[in-house]
Each structure stands twice: as C-alpha cells, then as structure tokens.
Image 1 (tube, one colour):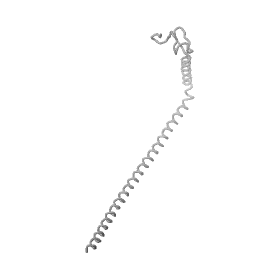
Image 2 (cartoon, rainbow, N blue to C red):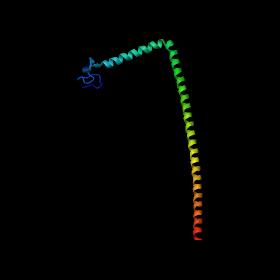
Image 3 (cartoon, helix red, strand yellow):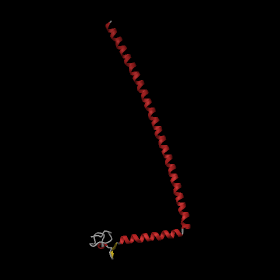
Image 4 (cartoon, one colour):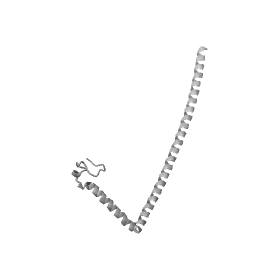
Length: 135
C-alpha cells in the first residue's frame, strides 16, 4: 500500500522497483525521473551560462525576433491583398450574375410579348376565316 504522501510503495506495482527503478530509504526514483531531474539541472546550468554570455547571443536573438516580426507583417500584407482580390472577384461575379438575370428577364419579357402578338394574330386570322365560311 502507499503512504499518504505517495513517496513509498510496499508492493512494487507498475511504478515500483520491479520496473527498473531503485528504492532508497523509502524514496523511489525511476530512471525516467532521474533523467528528468538531470535534464532540468542541465537546462538551468545552460541558462545561467547563456545569461553570462548574453552580450554574444542577445543581438542574434533580437535579429531573429525582428525578422519574425517582418515575416508576420509580410504574411499579413499578402493575406490582406488576397482577401481584397477574393472580395473583388465575388463582387464581379455578383454583378455578372445580376446582369445575366436582368438579360434573362428582358428576354423572357420580349418572348412573352411576341407570343401574345402571335396569339392575337392567330385569333384574328381564325376569326377572318370563320367569318368567310359563314358568308
């Protein structure tokens, strides 16, 4: 069973000594935990060494960040241009659609007028032909 602080295990479960860790006076350290602690210590030492040499790496870091900002601005400009191009394309397509609809509407109106005139002409001819037969 585990103690309430979780540092010691009596039965050696999945995280116990049977998995390659070592138990020393009630504290269990696995290889993974040991490597994690060593990595953290190495990182801390590296940061301290870099802090002492900041006059060497700081200009390079500032330059890299400056280039990152310039790249961000370049991408934002390109995206804005692309967005404007797409908006222009959509507006142009909408105008073309509306023009086509208006032309189709005009065509349909003219077609209806022609058909009405033809129907009237046919009715007049039929009336003339019917009147001639009755006379």
